[in-house]
Image 1 (cartoon, one colour):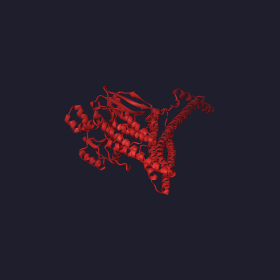
Image 2 (image 1 turned 180 degrees about the vertical axis):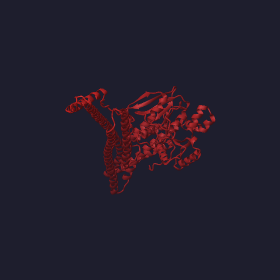
Image 3 (image 1 turned 120 degrees about the vertical axis):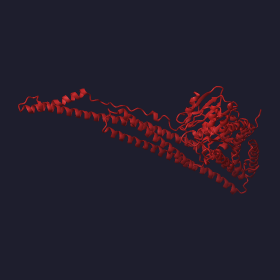
Image 4 (image 1 turned 90 degrees about the vertical axis):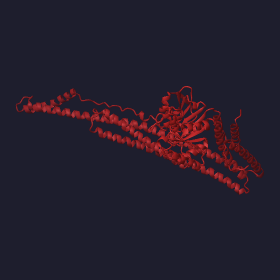
Length: 604
């Protein structure tokens, strides 16, 4: 049986193909394929530490998502129905590049290990986690998607969240009750609604905020002023989970979850068709608006009475194309210069830190004996090298973020999701090799005895000959005393010489180890910086190509208007008006489909 909104989507795809916009057509085909999937995806989104993961756990009464003060979700977790509990990690060898179509593999894991695998510091090359549990809420095909906090530029958090948003049928925007909705959260809400208009706001942590009712009313007023028709629910995940453990129904009612679950069943599960219509309407409306812009531009040029006005429009379109090209050259120069400075500064910083460590090593072994406390020194050196690497890497991340923002501000379109995820191997500090223990020679008792005898021989012989002139025998008290004195000095001199050799060997071993660390770690830093540069270049190049294609299409339309004669212009005007009429009719269908009254600002 035909589905009305898919027919509208097919019409829009046909219009994109006819008007030479294959990029829009391909995007809508992907949207159409997702509409044929019987699953109903509900995305749980919000800033970090707002209680998103705990909300998902409370909705399904199971600890399936990572929760904790020192735990941060780094990849999306898909929670869906299964007859028996199961879990799997979806990995990708190209996860660091955030390539959505890279080859993946599913690795089954124990369900109690999923939270640890997707938490900060453990995600590795995991693209997402999938958890299946037997829950009545999920039997209808409902899939809850826990996402990383929005706003972190150092990893793939923001990218993976907005990638998941493209698949969402509905969204639960989470904000805790300790504060009112911030300007950032309101902006995030508006951005989400451009891709998925089916949004519900959930106020969490009411159990720790006595003033949550005032915050709820304020948030509702803010949404009304912003023109956002989203429902707002206040809940406590802690009370919900406690009620599930104790079977306390009154506590469950106090948690606010019965109302939220009723909304999910009524407005999401039972209204799946309506949600699909709204999502299709938003996607189709966005595509139609992009199709209308060059047609309106061409129609305006075609209807210009004076040739000089037409030529002026052509010059303006060409000027906008040239301006975009100049800006493109500018941001590429800025990116190349800043990344070159960054690599130089990072390498100098690492060299400076390692030199300070080596100076401390020299100062230590000017006095200390390596044979005593070498193990303690080895731990000290490893700790200091690890600290130097960590601080150097932290500076690399901070500077990379700064470079991304600087490049973005020199570009016509500014976006925040700029830095690639996982720009640095997580185990790089764990790959520091163990220092090679130097050959520390020992001064044994036998060696001391032999050295003492060898030194005392000269003393006995020298003073024995001198005292023999006085008529004393060769071996006497004086010669023996001199021998003992010479022997002791020989032992002391030999001990000092061996100490110097041990100290020199220890310094050389430390020098080689620090040099090896510098070479390996600086190579990793340069690779990470290069990865950032390539990712930023690809990101802005894609934006530049999209803008340039739109501007070039407008320029081509203006050029056609200048070159064509009156008859051709009239014929083309008629064709453009017919295309606009079709788009207007199609947009009216989209308005009816989505229940919206958004005006395109065009006439038939």
